[in-house]
Structures are given as structure tokens and as C-alpha cells.
Length: 174
Image (cartoon, rainbow, N blue to C red; front, side, top):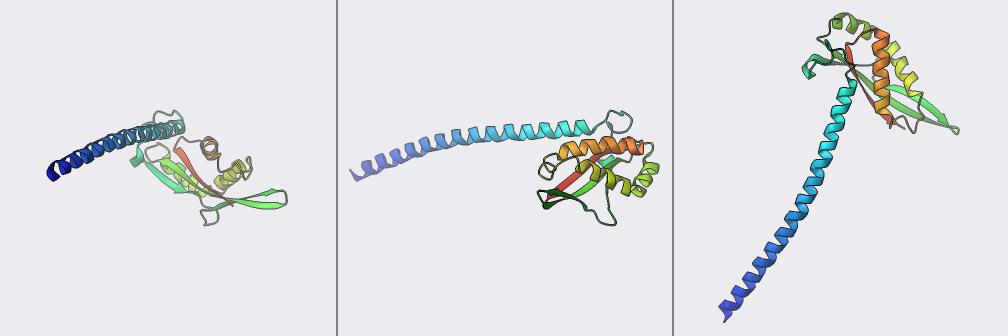
């Protein structure tokens, strides 16, 4: 009698375990599918930004890979920080920006333009400050992508080159 009772209890526990495993599996699969969709959306957004940074010069930027890109940090008097001050209601707020330029080393004018860019850091800093001042301190951080694309266009026009393939901006608002 004891053996059959133990067998029934064991069978009941196995069935309960099976039911709970099925429930757990379906809930994890659902969550996993949602996570995969989110990752796919993020990957698509990143691809769009990379494609948006390509300005269409087939000879330089579209054929360049990561190995062909070198990054130059924009410096302001030997500091990588570019400080922008905003005044709102008598209170001063600051945005600290770090900017890096992606240069295509396979571009025809890379050697000449990289020297010109390194010598023209004050012009680049001024362009960054001018672009950042178009926004308020509360919207400058959320406008990062817009600032990057505007700076890319402006710097390509200023230095008359497609050698500049990307502008990376990091913004800290205080």
C-alpha cells in the first residue's frame, strides 16, 4: 500500500513538474521573441545611421571598411572637452562635448586633409559650438544624431573633402 501511494505521489509530482516546465517554456519563448525583435530593431537603426553617414562619394566612403577609418579627437587647447554654457532663468547649465572625426585613410586627399584638419582644430571647435548653441541645454543631448549629421555636412564643406566619413559626438549635460 505504501509503495503504490508513493508511486501516485511521484507521478503527481512528475505531472506538476511537466506542466510547470511547459508554462515556463512558453513564457521564456515569448520573452525571447520580444528580445530578438528589439535587437533586430536596434540593428536596423544602427545600419540606417551608418548608411546616413555615407554621403554618396562612391570612390571614398562607400567602399571604406572599419580598417580604412582612423579617428581623430577634436581638441580645444589640449583638452578633448568642448564646454558649452547655457543660461536659462538666471541659472547656468553646461554641456560638455567630446567630438571625434572618422577619416577615410583610403581617400585620395587623406594625407593633405588630415594635416589640414589637425591644424584647423579651432575651426572645428567653433563649428561644434555654433551647432550646439542652436539647441537648448535640455534638448542638446537628445539631438545628438542631428548634431552629428549637421557637423559632418558642415565639416565636409569647410574642408572641401569627402575624407571625413563620420562625426561622433558624446554629450554630458550638467
